[in-house]
Length: 363
Ligand SMILES: [Zn+2]
Image (cartoon, rainbow, N blue to C red):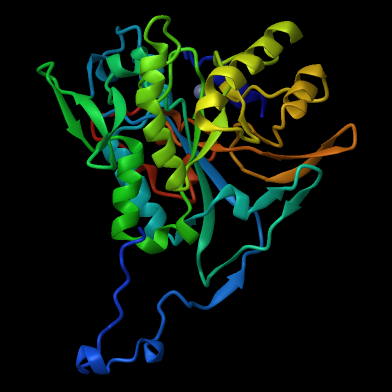
């Protein structure tokens, strides 16, 4: 996985809808619900094999100069690591057409604090499970500048986003990745197994979900604004993962720096999103069998996820202590352009059909 690590070092910043029974001609008072076939009781089979894990970054909703112009200093950054709103919508459609079903990571493996246990995953016949994560859903200022939404908000109790329009005005919309996934699941409830949602990997150096919770003077106010959105996402079954506090190069920094970063995340982000055992390596740069890893383990992290072209989830051990490990497949600009190994033969979609028509053929 050296290639993916190298590439990731380049990453510069860094309802289920009500299911209505087919009603018979009987008058409602005569209808006996118990005699109706229950569409939720489907034939399930135990899934054999590896559960895939794919991940995204926030969506580009406005294709700006950085998307088209090679001379723009953010061009590579945008082209390499992001997909557009349209691409994301077509990816979901293709996953669904190809019988993929979103599952919760904890329905694949579970930790009881001491051991990691592979779960028996029974799915409707023919369905192929996948786990999804979204990295850096912080809405960094650099991302907003290049065309993402500016922050998540609650609009009449529903997750929505503030979106800066090309004319500079701000509108409330639903073009963020969470709302888009919700919209798709509302249309296709069988796309999500047991209400599974995505994992959200957060750093903290530029706030969370578009709130500048790190900024002196306004941190408390921003935290108070972010908290109801975090709580709402948790109630919807989104999981939160640590992505380190500063998007850290875990292999390069000293133990002291790494420890401080881990403590900062715990103090400033876990205090908002709650304790988690999920850790997503920044830059896909993982490090094991050393004191840095031991510190993460001591802090309660048990699921460690990197980047690769195959997922291969597995139970590994560090000094006889078990942890979960998997790679995650990056669905990003490199993948869309076919330069990520394997993406031209993607099992998830045909890149030539999904790719944004405005995306240059090569990066
Ligand atoms: Zn990241």
